[in-house]
Length: 75
Image (cartoon, rainbow, N blue to C red; front, side, top):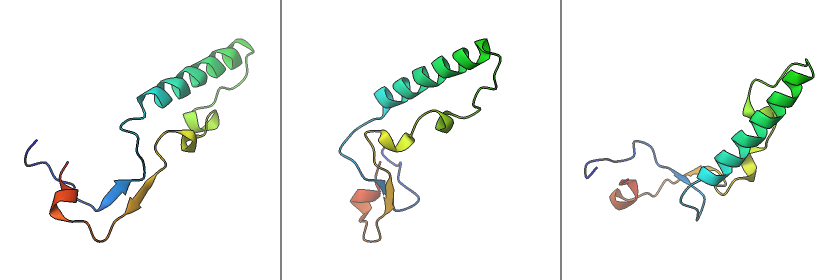
């Protein structure tokens, strides 16, 4: 990975390393809602965004950083 670099100057706005716990929680809720709606013979949502808000996670989003240095561009 020593030669791995970003191709765009887009960085996450966060102090969190990962969203793994958030994704687990969102998928668990999505599966629960789908199973319940299928049992009731109703149409289940096709995307997770229909059940949860992805902006509630530990990472807040991304932003373009124009003044990124070579060190910033390394992964």
